[in-house]
Length: 223
Image 1 (cartoon, rainbow, N blue to C red):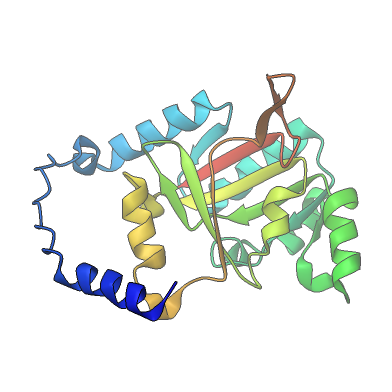
Image 2: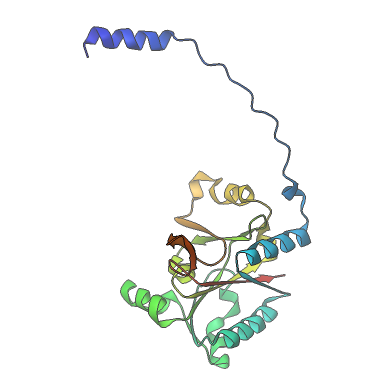
């Protein structure tokens, strides 16, 4: 393209009338935003159960450990990998596991990444983590991943058990994304939304669970 032709095109673009700003139509507020605490819990439970997830509700940390004991017995779990996030760490699952006959590992137990990856994929039968957020409209949990909440613990073992304080339940996705991504100076390195067990429809069009992640998702609501 010649310089003259280029200047003519740029001149026309500069002289073109500016587009008018069209106001966005009124959007009524979401009914989900008016849900109270019990409605959040009821909808979260219903929607996650519809995706074949399992939800238990307990009163406090003591009941949470009692429920974990029930789950471990029902699922035959003898070796698990636990995160050390703010929800799980206070439970001191390693000491509790010794009493229960359950071996509790953490990412910090391994000298290198290869040993950790081998353990989380082949040695443990379940991953136990906290959950940073819950979305009631879809039965979704959200996890911020860091050194205390390694991503593999929630996606590599066959079973994922997530502990979610009810105070971290929100009505819609936007309520969570605003909190996670609202401050551009404090963005997490990784964040995942999970709705039910891992599922794919790539195999002859049929739905199959556990191909790319856990076959079971169990959420314990605390509070």
